[in-house]
Length: 142
Image 1 (spheres, helix red, strand yellow):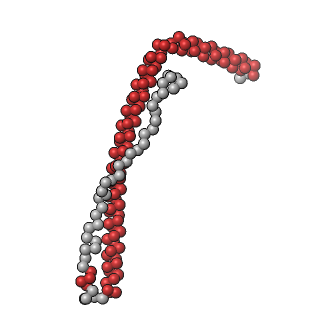
Image 2 (cartoon, rainbow, N blue to C red):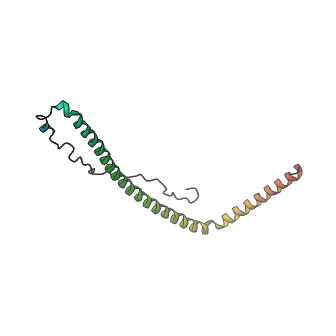
Image 3 (cartoon, one colour):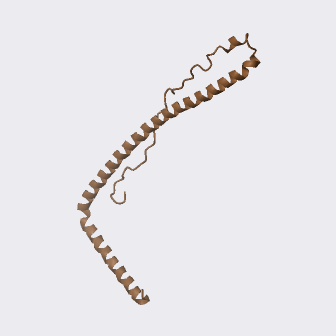
């Protein structure tokens, strides 16, 4: 704003991640066994441990599988959002560079004499500092 007299748009953009609509979760046939058919043949206390082991193994596998599927869906959604942010950032950067180039071209023609005067003044100050530094080195035997 101070250099060109024009506000430049350089704000950050937010990430708009679309939540997966219907997660790809499948339970399958874990509970589709007819365990109650065994009850007349075997008492429940005899098959209880086997049924429990079956359910525990199947459930842990299904939880892992479904969390992996859900994680993949989120990953794809985040990738799409990051890709759109990247495109937006490149577009904004191109706009900013173009705006600065136009402002510099326009301002260079209007302010060329002032810029030349400032450069000459800076060169004089640089020479004066160099001379002062050299005189100090001679005095202190640098």
